[in-house]
Length: 455
Image (cartoon, rainbow, N blue to C red; front, side, top):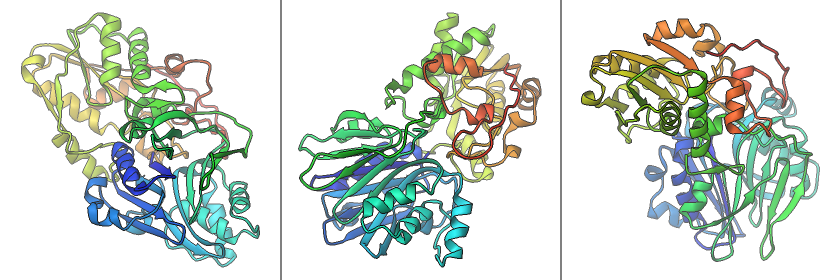
């Protein structure tokens, strides 16, 4: 779920990278970093914390050059030290290199063990460090050929920006699991970012999505060169529309807000509730709740206030922090809720922590009934492509039926969007990555064929 950005061919590239990372702070809150290249050297600043707390006028001023790449970290592999922040920088035979990565390599362990057997020394637990070692150890003479060599040895999901002292290479995996967009700046430079909301903030015009399996090469005084490294097998991640992305972003041609609105309407068709009021869990449940209310003709209210200074609970690394932040994060408007039968709409149900506390909160505010509706299918399987659900034990739907979960979270009733309903809301023309819901891997690993029931 990390955010990456690449800026090329413009003065103060690091400032634009900073602004882009600020726009994509929702994709990762653990650490952030930017490296800038000015022809002779690459300069790096990275640290644990939010974009606005890590960067200031002083450290941005040392990041000189017309090329900058940046990263916001949301950990799916690695630890929490600053060493596991990105970009990952190294000096090697051809000079200096810096890499940022959004995704998860499914063969990271095998690749790492082979590299260690061949004498590699690792400084982090990140799969991204594999990429740097593979490039450095390649026998090819040119960097582009070393990158191709590396790409043939990794499997899984990745969007990459690789920076040398004079060029920038941007790659999206053949499955297009994570989003990546290309924009053009008014003064002629280019920006590549995980979401289009970053392009909007820096005033770049959207050019197109980076194609699955495509590499773009940015070099001085030239238009970006496109190379189709792999044949596309497009499986964009459905979770980008459900939760990850900002509602104003356009992901592979589809507005995230509209997709969430569609999910809410489809959820209302599949799992209606006889209630007086529809409330969203802010903020990512708002569009789905509006769609749900519109489809059923039931009043919609913003009956829960969110403290926006807390951050996103799903991407907090420890359970104890998640528990505490839910209490600080949400507050009910009692006069709207008291004496009402409530349908509360959330974007997903992972561990059940947030849902349990929300149901309790609404009942304490005087709700007569609380009907929980989830605008996504049941999350039953861990995803190896970059979602923080590493074990089935953490997923409440993997071991409980819908009715059991309703009892556990003390909701009057509980309903999920079906897998078919999700793909219908998103558009049936596309094969989506639905690993969390159906357990079927397609990029490395064995495919599963579980039976999935949806309320």
